[in-house]
Image: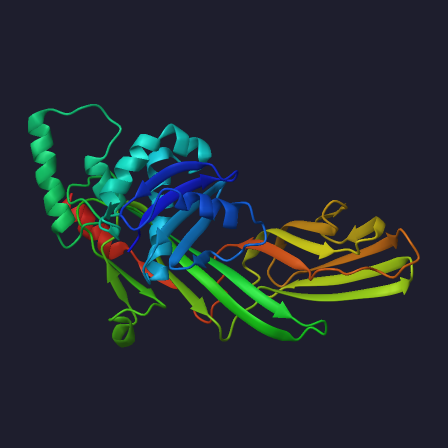
Length: 382
């Protein structure tokens, strides 16, 4: 499976290096440094040179790299790389960057030896790893024997991702649904492509071994019959599932834009933004980025809501709206003066981002979770 694992910084320096098989030499790291780190034109996450494949993930100022000589499952290798990042963040704090790696390189080597066995992923559950890889003081022999027994039961049991002796004074479970809308629209306002990428995130602080029931758009065995999934949540924060919808996408906003080239030295912008969601909801932190010609010298903006500012270094106008109510509208107007008599030089498409609470863009509500069952069970077992 995985023959070698490396962590590089953005300069190409090797921070972590571990070979799991004898089919590679340590000099293989130099090849990745030359072919990927030193070559900004390389954008593919997979580079194959001869019979050697490099799988890499960019995170903060690091390159997380897995090297293999066989025809490995790409999804599994990338999942392993992202799992290493999650484990690192759980051990070192919120950030997994170059400084965290340098300060905890001994612990990282210990984790790699436990996670991988001869290049095959074995156990990457954070709760299980924290039972026998810890930064705390040395325990007594009796405590070590008791912990070893618990580790064996958990690692080989049906629920290796959760300890059975978890206790909380107050049982709580939180569910967050995060959706990203991808939209491609023509200059005439026709929708060419629209899809939604969603993720269901949970934070579970429950006693014992609860079983939660949730209705969700997921390809699970019970979903086809009763539209539900049943799961035993890990302790703490985790990602329950991901989903993707490509039909009947409910667009949260409608943007009507008119760009008119008045003369060779002036361009006028007129934009109208309308919120297409329920009037009871509000969208917060709405940001629109309107591109300007490369030869624009001065830009004057007028908005009915929020604030607009021209950013010459990035050749676009940033229109920020702190809050807009569902069904509401906002207008934007701008005059761009060009620095020469030449016509406006190329512009990128307009982009926008926003945060909306309790608003789903997928055809049906993305997740309706019933945690009363698991909360009741947890309370009973406490």
